[in-house]
Length: 291
Image (tube, rainbow, N blue to C red; front, side, top):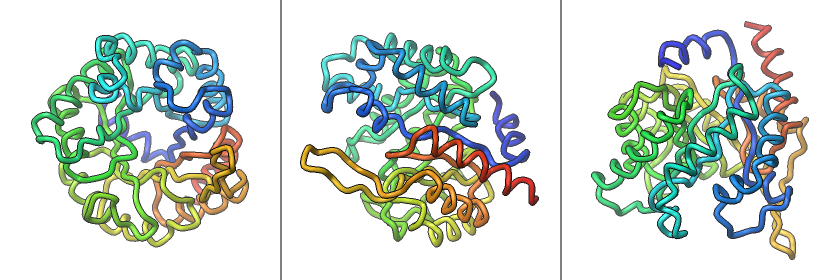
């Protein structure tokens, strides 16, 4: 996919991405604390079924489960020697699930090495992005990012390695502040000026707490705005399970308001399921029908 093709996709109407991966894998039996990427490769049908359900619900883009398949995380787990094999297989699983009429985004995230030298961060992202591009992803997403510098490194690495579109989304407090200093409003503006194809937020909170954030982000940028929040705020059970506060219909109604305020690319993060995406697809149809 070219950057121009991505722009044309957004211009045709609200773009729907997928919902949560991790919380659904835990429900499907993935043990806590394991390397999710390795577990998915060993239990590939679980991921195929989930992403196929997202596509059937209306997702136009699914995120390949390559979230933490970078040098830092895989080295910590003794799996760095498998970085190419794991990323390629994970992209292949997504492609098997959704075919060629749904886009597959190569998924990147924070290395959690916020004090690392910028050149080292560039190398980490160049490596994974190069493998994902070779594996045939349609675009890239750097999500659940915690600070500007690391996100800039992912964006710069993308521009050096390939010509694919890249979306960048931060995880934030409900007032728009970032966990490692600064705020999302200045950050999305800086990323847009650097050439990100879409900017925005994911995870952290539910859509009911994001109206002001979305409204103010929209004032800062002209590129598409990505909004992929959690299913409300979780409570933690005695067994350590996160139970999210929103059902699909309530989530969809709050997301409808965020689309009205300027969200262009929408989906769900922790606690959301294919049913949430199905409801969002109905929201997209109603909102786009009014344009």
